[in-house]
Amino acid sequence: MKNEAATAFKIITTLSIVYLASNFYRSSIAVIAPNMMDEIGLTHEELGIIGGIFFIAFALFQVPVGIFLDRYGPRKTICVLALFAAIGSVGFSLATNFLELSAARFVIGIGCAPVLMGSLVIISRWLSVERFAFYASLIVGMGGVGNILATTPTAILTDIIGWRDVFLVASGVSALSAIFGFFIIKDAPKDHAFHDREVESMKDTLRGVLEIIRNRQFQYIFAINLVIYGTVMTIVALWGGNFLRDIYGLDLTARGNILFWMTIGVIGGNFFYGYLDGLFRTRKPLVLAAAGTTILLLVILAVIPVIAVWQVSALLILFSFFGSYGVLIMSHGRSIFPEKLLGRGIGTLNTAVFLGVFLLQSMGGFIIGGFVSDDGLAPLMAYRVFFITLAVLVSIGVFAYSRSEESKTTNKKAPETA
Image 1: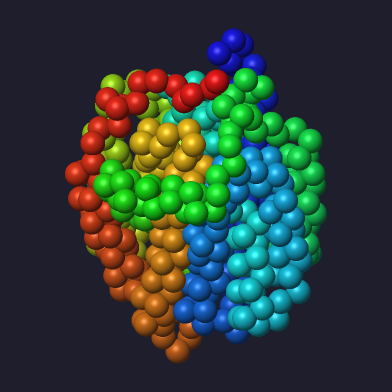
Image 2: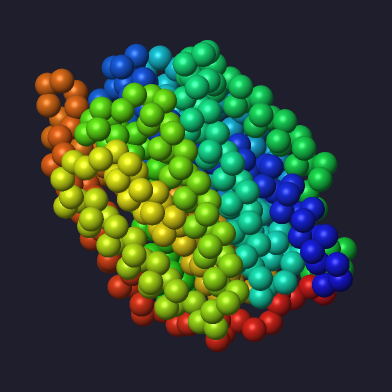
């Protein structure tokens, strides 16, 4: 494609700005979780559900979002649903109990559901397929500024105006990003087949979803997608803050600082794997090496005693970096979907990502909550069990993925553009 670098810069910058708000909401309650628990009287189990329900909303809406992307295009799908995030954020700022917090966070999840998937569909249509993983990593990485804002900046702002007003500010940012995206985002190049598509009947649309689900390669990739992002976000976006408070006695700002660097690790990991994908002739060995390193770090976190804060911080940052290899799996998944199923394919595959976060964050609440003492703190043993459970689940996902075919040998051509 002519002048691809300029096209890529415009597309990726625009999509990253829209994606920023979504990433903030994913991680926003990790640093303020203890404050919310104290103010509203939440249990660990309830906090786990509140943290995870955002992701179950994502998971439930991925297939509908995929259908919307194929029928109406990313521009309308992303920008219309983004307004739900703004509304949900206002509701979260006003919530006074567990049910209200859960409902508001669910609505936020609906609003954020199409952003990443729509972005991946757009870069698939505008940019070269050979560099899909790299471009996807740029969007995820640059959009990760939202995750950064959810750490130290949120901790500082919470100290100044309170966590409720933080979400009112986030609501305004969400609304502005939706308006911005509506005027800038373009669904596909002028000569792309998307513009000449025949709108399928609902029966044919659902048949396409079933075709995706029945694909054996899709099933193998779906399995590992359940645990990659979920494992990282369970710690970075929720339970990492409680771990640092319960075991190391860190206050709000100190927790925020460590979560900040963990988030930098997540962003760096996405760039790292996106870059390596362009260098390696095969993708599976890279995925298996990344997963193996993640498992090793989880085991280390599970067995070590209480160590210096800088040492445990280094381990958590390394875990965040090496565990952020989801762009490789999405690139693998992209290779098995034809153009007409692109939105539904990526959306259905992404269901695993957010279903996994919901299940793992909720699981963390029940594991850690089962050990809580009378003072409301969880002992080291709670987190040992938590970390080792995550390591076992990643191992199961890796075993399933190991049965998949090497994606780089089956996808040499760019997607149809005319």
